[in-house]
Image (tube, rainbow, N blue to C red; front, side):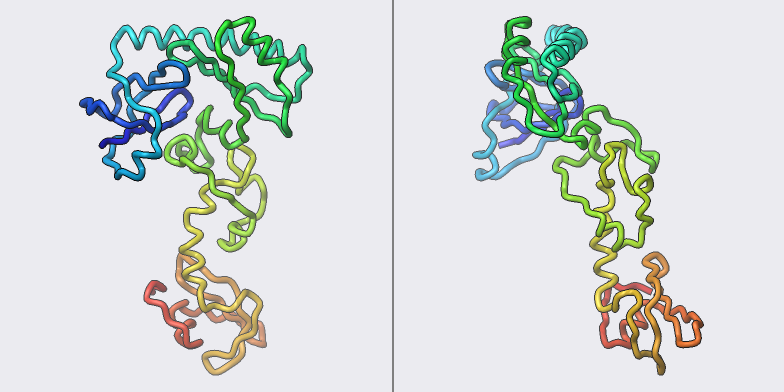
Length: 273
């Protein structure tokens, strides 16, 4: 059976079963099963799944979307700005410590989701009651993190490309300052932080390569006996595959990383030249 990844507003993605065996095409709109009704999104990916994975997918694709459905979706989107204004007013009335980020109407308007950030847990029960009284439909307040906030608004990183979180990252992995240190990156917050204000997710992309190349190499500042003398380990250049060795007179010798490891009795076929 096919499993279908569907994209909704602000790059929200969910997976569904194609149990009706519809002839689906990537990029087309479809109607999917949602909480107490139907929702509409764009088909992002289609793949064949095994029985175990299928069992973990609860909802399914209902049908292809029509032109009337597309018009109906646009009508729902047109209501979101007003809903955001009403919610913001209610947040201020209740003096709640939360920042409203986005509003999303379900396609059939049976649910409105308000996305917000907050430093701690917020008691928004009174707010939900007020909003339900105004909109006469199901209200869902969903707290998200700052990375999810950046994902919903999209943007461009310092690399000049679209944000990774809004293009292909599905699950956020922990990013630590140690990752930057291991790659000899500057620890200036402005240079290693993303638009969300947190450490950039891309600090994790090449980390395994750095760790693999540094295997068998003593830490910077260590004293080693090699090449007929004693040297202090200097900086390792991953791009050049070289290591700086400083002798007792302060002179620097540049060695190929592969040769240095071989001298110490550690060889790795992935070291390169």
